[in-house]
Image (cartoon, rainbow, N blue to C red):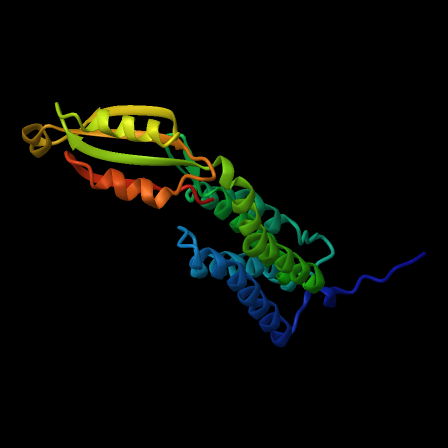
Length: 242
């Protein structure tokens, strides 16, 4: 079967290009909106830019070298530049992953950036249905499955608290006794010295607590009670959001 090579397949109209870029903006914005509402490091604008950039690279890879398509010695590979997006987006995603003690946050945001890059490539390549259904599934996963996940994991929730207290006081004993009376399990307790000249004069200790809460324990009450204890200079909660 003989096939005739048509160099026009490497050309795209300005209208079609605009539609694909606008679609990438819309779909990336939908996913970024959920991250923005959750207060995550990569939010609305970041996801839009990643999706738009991926779409633009897909368009460039497919149609940006159309001027050379008439040369029989030139072979165009529309997947070459697009493939680099999938590996390159890992550098951006890694910047959203943070580790504080035993707590790791930002994994879901990094994954959403990776998926948004795939959505942008799909929109840029004109794979409209694939881009649309993928966006729908991601939005459902982030909005609704996130609530379901928190509900199932509430019974085994772990929290991290950072307390600043006076060195040599009985505050640490009071904290341990209070948590023991409430049946709150301490997975880890780390005591550090506050750095700096001011801290040296004041004698401040930093205590990091990793707590495992039961369903009946109200985390807000625990925080308020600990913050009100004598000798506690400051209290910080470390979020466990993904």
